[in-house]
Structure formats: C-alpha cells, structure tokens
Amino acid sequence: MRKLSILVALAFSTLYGGSALAADSNELVHYACKINAEKAKGWIPDKISLTFKDNKQLTRFWSSSFKVDLNTVKVIRYTEDFREIKYRGTYKASYGNNITTIHTITILPKHDDKITYVMKFLYHSNHYVAAGTCKKTLL
Image 1 (cartoon, rainbow, N blue to C red):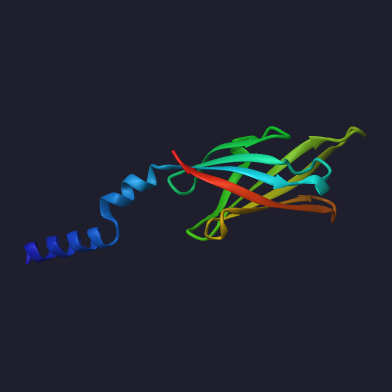
Image 2: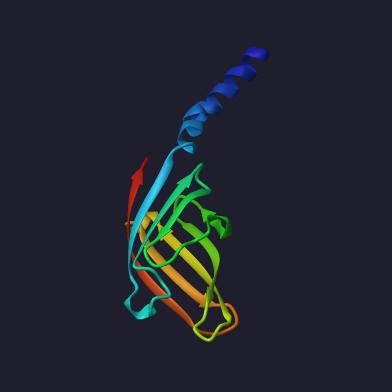
C-alpha cells in the first residue's frame, strides 16, 4: 500500500510540474514597457520596467517620469493571462497641497504583452488611460 501511495504522489508531482514548478517559481520575469502617454499630461510615464519573482512578488519598478516606492505597490493578479499591479502616489501640487493618485497597470501576456496604464485622482473624477507594449525577458 505504501508503494502505491508513493507512486501516486510521484505521478501527480510529475503531472503537475513537481520540482519543475519549484525551479520556475524562482525565475525572474522582466517587462520593459513603452507607453503612448502623450495625452496624459505627464501623469503617466512613457516607459516603465517591472520585474516579478515567484510569479507574484514585484522586485523592481522603474518609471521614466517619477520615483515609485516599491512598498506601496501591490500585485493584484498574476495569472497566465493577466498581470495587474496597483499603487498610490502622493505628489506636491503647485498650490501647496498634496495630490493622491491611484495607478493600475495591466499586462496581457497572451496578447503580445500589451499594457494598459490607468491613473485616477483619489478625490476627483479625472483620470488618464494610456496603452502600449512590453518586451518580456526571463532573467
């Protein structure tokens, strides 16, 4: 009976990736993205770079327009079809008050790694949307 349970466990391990899954989960997936952000008036960067580890943890976020605190970024979804992250940004307005924004970034791996970037103001109805493409690299 014990041999049978070991064989069944081995079969399921092989069938569902077993140790191969463990090796893949440590792989870094890097996206270098270009975004058509002309209409966003500087609120959305034209280039960003994202690196994911363990299929869910964001280890790097770089933006061509502003600094992003990695501690404020949350991975909302990371699936085969869909990558979505969200973060809040706080910026000093020219009139002295702080402006809080919510940024949602979506990458669609099955659609040529297309990216959509949505920026909303927290206390206003204004928002900007931009789209582009990413180049995926396994590190």
